[in-house]
Image 1 (cartoon, one colour):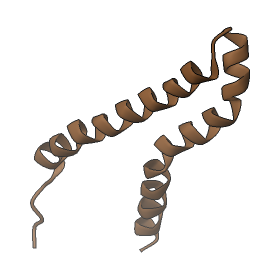
Image 2 (cartoon, one colour):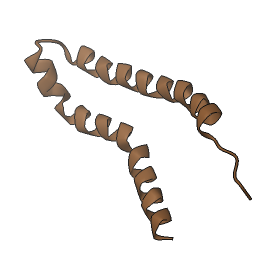
Image 3 (cartoon, helix red, strand yellow):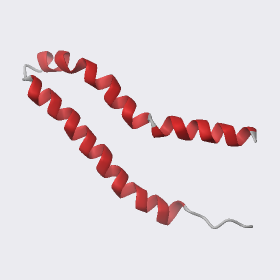
Image 4 (cartoon, one colour):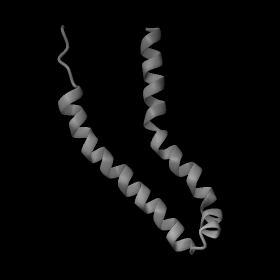
Length: 75
């Protein structure tokens, strides 16, 4: 039972890992735009590009993990 709680905790933390990247990145957008001498529009576009890549990777890796990762249970 203790192992199950560890597995659930790690699964929840790994699920939120992709969103943590955005939460750390968004507050620094004005500083990034100033450091790269670009407009705020282009700095905000990087968040959009990140989210497109993040969501499309789930569409690709989800079916692969269903096909490869699932094992039949021995009941």
